[in-house]
Length: 220
Image (cartoon, rainbow, N blue to C red; front, side, top):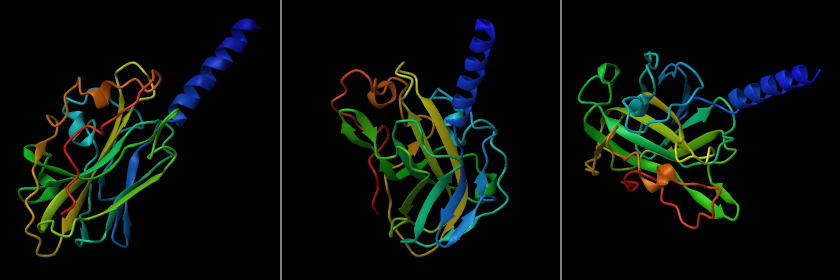
């Protein structure tokens, strides 16, 4: 009986852990909603190394079949497959493709951050991303036209081990307009070090300050 109870508890724990994971699987751009524009992750399971190639657009995501057009000033964001149960920051980046975005793997110094969701309170630690299932910003007004990957990430810090669970998705968009902005750009991976304090933070041990990893947000 005790062994059976332990087995049932283990199954429930595994089920809860899987249920608590999620995918950014829907692109929200202007008035359009698209799953076809998202390079869909293979599963809800996170990865853990922010310096790995998975940091770009996740582990071997499926190809997207659509490029969604959006104008500067219009909304841009992602919807989760679940609520965001884990505590941790969320950021949205744009990466300008050198040509056809469907053929670009996201490599090179091409990325800039356009939004982030950071800390809300410290006692207890609570992030502004917690329990949301949509993350929405706008395309900066001075964004140059062209084809882009829109990328969203969460660095989930709930394990308390100094190793995050990382959730990432990329979607293919085309920005219209005549923007001439030139934001500072980073490479992904390469934009955040494995020992960045925002990556290794222990949210259970008296944290009193927190900076979202990565570059500053470009407002355009």
